[in-house]
Image (cartoon, rainbow, N blue to C red; front, side, top):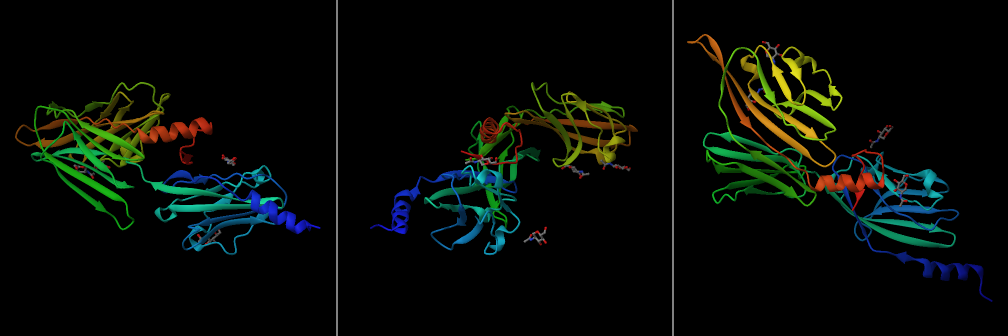
Length: 347
Ligand SMILES: *[C@@H]1O[C@H](CO)[C@@H](O)[C@H](O)[C@H]1NC(C)=O
Ligand SMILES: *[C@@H]1O[C@H](CO)[C@@H](O)[C@H](O)[C@H]1NC(C)=O
Ligand SMILES: *[C@@H]1O[C@H](CO)[C@@H](O)[C@H](O)[C@H]1NC(C)=O
Ligand SMILES: *[C@@H]1O[C@H](CO)[C@@H](O)[C@H](O)[C@H]1NC(C)=O
């Protein structure tokens, strides 16, 4: 007579399912969900293991109806969680927060219930999207650069530049910086595109206009970009001055309040121009699908002879289009109606 334990063993053998790996793309520093589902049943035992073929690392375990983290690898401390209310429904997905590059690799989701066990594999790939492409005129060169990218980016110019110098470097954290310079030509527009498999952005140097404005106030206008969710005016590419939504602008930061007269999407008006306002003013416009950026170089000079302030306004217009990230967001939002962009999506 066949014993019950033998039946179980047979069932186990039959039910050990190995499906194809799922690829999951997680944004560096954000949180991410590693999907796994299993046939729901009693006494579920779940183990998430990184690099099951090599140096196994215990990522997260759950059994006896609770998390079991005694054996958890130090690198995953405080960064993992499971959806406890979903486990009884066969959802063994793992939420990982603060994603780092070392998280890349293959993960096994092992589940076992009285009636059988299952293994499912997830390939986690980390990306750091192209966030900002800077383009500027320096001497008789045009320089395009972008930092903090992963995996290795590519850069190309349109129209094609035969005489480009390109430099790719990697920080200790393995993030890439790319920089390319081409001789400047005064007549035409150049576009620089930085891309990775996860997405790309473009910046266009449309023209450089030098204009002398007399007086103490100047206005910079952004674009008439259609449906947007948010815009941000920044100084020198990083410092935020003011942001707004379709309902209108918020108040400028304390430091900028004294300099700003008006700050809508269409127009940024600065008063009492002084030399420390020299710099690059950028307006970023976000919509669901893309980000567009226009940069303006404002040079405030004092002309002692004329006893006036001459302002040279160089206009650098950049348009950044995020293709890949838009796709990621589209997938994310169609699956999960909340518009949180920090969660991952499974491609
Ligand atoms: C598991 O539950 C989480 C949280 O509700 C959800 O985001 C995820 O899509 C679910 N995964 C599966 C495989 O059902
Ligand atoms: C995890 O969180 C606890 C409590 O919040 C804290 O004491 C501990 O230092 C954290 N561990 C790590 C590795 O961050
Ligand atoms: C410019 O200098 C003034 C003092 O002269 C200071 O109050 C202001 O914060 C400075 N603005 C910027 C943008 O650095
Ligand atoms: C802003 O950038 C310009 C040009 O790169 C530089 O000359 C200026 O010193 C910067 N201003 C501040 C306040 O950092």
